[in-house]
Image (cartoon, rainbow, N blue to C red; front, side, top):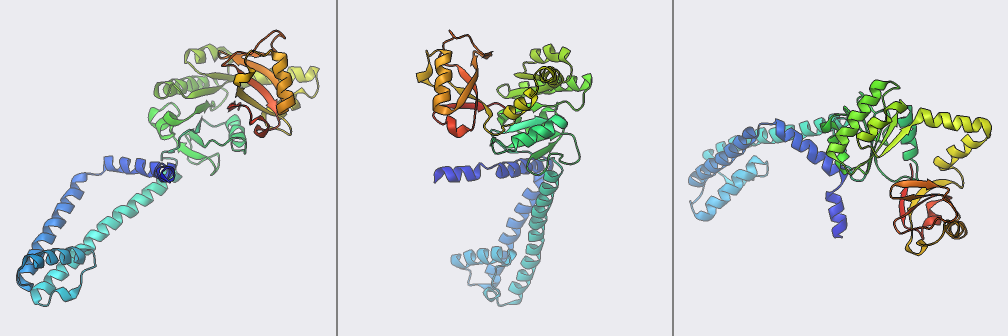
Length: 360
């Protein structure tokens, strides 16, 4: 029960509302509302004393009743039977008129906030409020296909798109933040500090787009060094610069496509196989799982046979100390802390294993 209550008050919607309230509060002069509150309290106190003197027997209980009646009248809840003389009637009219002004001011402030909230959210000027999500920085053809893949059932993370555009190019299923991918304020609105990973896509195929991507990586690393950063790079010569920016993964799509095309020219059907594996086709999905304790010390051949027999999974590579070793030698033995990269039909077949992550 407590978890449900905590989850309710820790929802992304409430965090967005809190962000908008804080933003408006920084721009609104609080002295106006303080003066209004003080004036209202003083007006109620004075009018209640006048009614207490003119309309009651002037007892302490009558004073409390007068205060209550004055406050209720301002809110439109007062009863006319409490007063019976011209002084009480006049004070009641004044309280009613003052109450209308107060209610109109409060209603106007609430309506103004709702309009501002809806407009800002629709224009991408809000804050995501997510936790454990994926931030896509920039928009191009790769980002479009990437978001389509991340929106499938195989991925459960929320997606936030940070892009400088007047409208959301990714559709309503993705939370849109309009801004500059190199701006720390815009990255904070995208929730980069609470994201699990950030994917940076260049705006076009130019070298200037790569430079902008490097600045984006530097901004992310300064705000959230623990967030996993993956970058699409145009020019292979720029990869060392991205490495120096401490990026986690670099993908040179042109180079990858060239290698794949070359292999396909020699061995027909390889491109379809690779696309099927990475896109989660029938009977094939690429996963990375942590090595179970009872697998430690086993040879690579024994592990591959066991995975195939028990989980219908095909071992492709082993990741050790951040280095992926594809097709290890037959004498290679697994050690605690290793990760396995494999192809399987679904996560359901891998339930006995401790899942680490699905490779995007």
